[in-house]
Image (cartoon, rainbow, N blue to C red):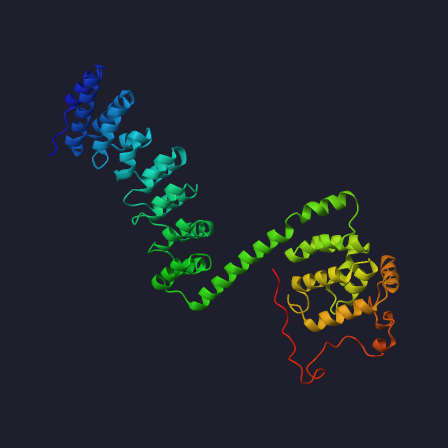
Length: 409
């Protein structure tokens, strides 16, 4: 039960504060708590309340930490304590601030955000465990990425978490299985974000998503496909480029880009612009001519370029397949018919003829087709164009033509 405010109480506290003995200090803490909790602050005039808060704050500054903590514990759950005193306690050492940050309803969002920005990890952890947390406070708490604080926010049913904050957490969770589980246990998680997570979580969490979120199966399938494509692409890129750039840089330093094998990792990793530039250096032609050789349908210009630069057939085959998987006419697939035709042309064209044609390209003679059937010495082959790929009609009764080869990773 509260009593009317008595100004003599403040005077008594001021006298008691002069006594520096530990037992007197402990008694002072009790008296301060009794005065604040037992006083009807509503009976104070504005001037009296201001004076009381000023004296109490001044006394608080001189109190030892254990006494401040005892006072904070008494005031934390009360709604009648002076606000300035509560704010001062909230910014004190964590031993003092913890109960106030955890329980006091007198702290508004602005004061909590200031503590989050300026105080310690432990202060943020105490705020994360409050019974109710607004969306701005939750966002400020999780932004630094402190694992225990993020966990406390996600495990707090009284924390309001905005969609933007959830999106950031979902992205981070790709490499953190514990975080995935905590996010998916939130009842306020947007089903769209749960569907996005489906592609990278464990089988158990996938079942949890299906059972607890209303997600369109088309969106689920797309999430799976996108996630797996990203993983495969990242893995392939890392594997393909492992050490390749180091070797290429050394070759450039020597001005000696003569080995087509060095360029294979670039094709497999999809590094188009770098590949085009380096192939131009390899063949000693313009970048524009290099692009035509690399991408023209049929593969014959590439065959001539490689044959004219003394590339053996096995390496040419690897490089041709890598270029078609990079994004040729078949959309990243290798057409066996085109491969058959290109390799046949590679075998038939004379190395000296290929050398002469590449020399012409180097002189800038690139108008019209880069390659023509007249380059092939075999008269029978010249009379019958090589372009058509083998078909079912050409091989009646033979097994059906194979499907395009799948992308190699």
